[in-house]
Image (tube, rainbow, N blue to C red; front, side, top):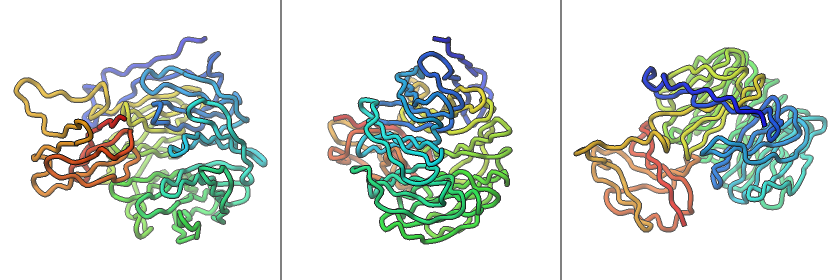
Length: 403
C-alpha cells in the first residue's frame, strides 16, 4: 500500500483568528482505495465513517472518522457522482451519473450492496428527507427528481423540475426540497410530503450547489459562473443576500456546531468559510487541486474535501470545538454549561440568563427540544450526537447520548 500523504498545518493554529485549518491530506490512489477523482462524500454518524465515491475505480471507499484511515473498498458502478445517507434504515446510496445510470444502495452495517435502482436518466444529486423517510435523486438527463421510499427502495413519485437538475437539499423546518437547475439558472422548490412544486427561484448563472442552515432556516445556492453564493429564506423562498465566493464555487456543506457554511471553489483551489448568522466571509482556506464534495463530521468537528485532480482528501479542522480541541477550564475557572447524567441534562442557570433561548439540536441541526435551567429529561431521545445551542449564532456544545 502506498504511504498516505500527510500535510500538517500546525502554524495555522496560531495565525488564524477564525480557527479553521488544513489538518491532513488522505491519499486515495493506493491498493486499498484505488479510487481516482473523488466526486462525492457522505458522513455516516453511527460508525463515524466517511464514504467517498469517484469518477474511476468502480468502488466506494469508507474512511474512519477518528483516525482518517481507510476501512473498506466497496465494489460499485463507474463514476460515483454523489453519495447520500439514510439514518433511519442505515443505508448508503451512491448515484452513478451515466446513460441511463443507476443507484447503488449499500448496507451501512455490513458495507455490502443490497440493491441497485435505475430511477431516471443520468441520476446525480441525492438528498434525504428526514420527515418522510425519502431519498430524492435528481436526474440530469430528463430534468426530473425521483423520490425513493427509504424502506422499500421503490420510486414513489417523479417531479418535473428545470433543465439539468444538479443538486438537492431538504428544508427540515418547512419540509421542502430544493433543486438547483444548472441549465435554467433556477431553483425549483417542491413539497417534501406531496412532491408538489411550490416555487421557482432565480439563482444566478449556472446554480450548481445547495446547502441548508436550520439555525436560521436559510438555503445557500452556489452559482458556478457568478462566483457567488445566494442566500434564500426558507419560509418565503426569497433571496436574502449574495455572498462573494472564489472562482467557480461548486459544492457546499454546513457545520451546525459552529453555524458555518463551507463552499469549495473549483478553479481557485480554496474553500470559502461563511458565517451562518451574518452571511459574512470568515476565511478562505487553500486546499487540494480542484476541491469538490465537502462533507461534515460532527464527532470530530472536521470538514472533508475531495481533491478531484489530486485524488486526495483535505481534512479541515475548526479550533472552536471538536474532540481534540475541546477547551478545558483552567484552575479556578468556572465551566458554565450542562451535564448529562442518567438521562437527565442539567443546564447551568447562567446559560439561560439574559433571555437567551437554549435548545438541544440533532447533528443535522434539527431542533429536538427546548431547554430550561436545571434538570431536563432527555432519557427518551435516541442515541447519537446532540448540540446545546444557547442563543442564535453561538457555537453549540456537543453531547453524546448512549444507550
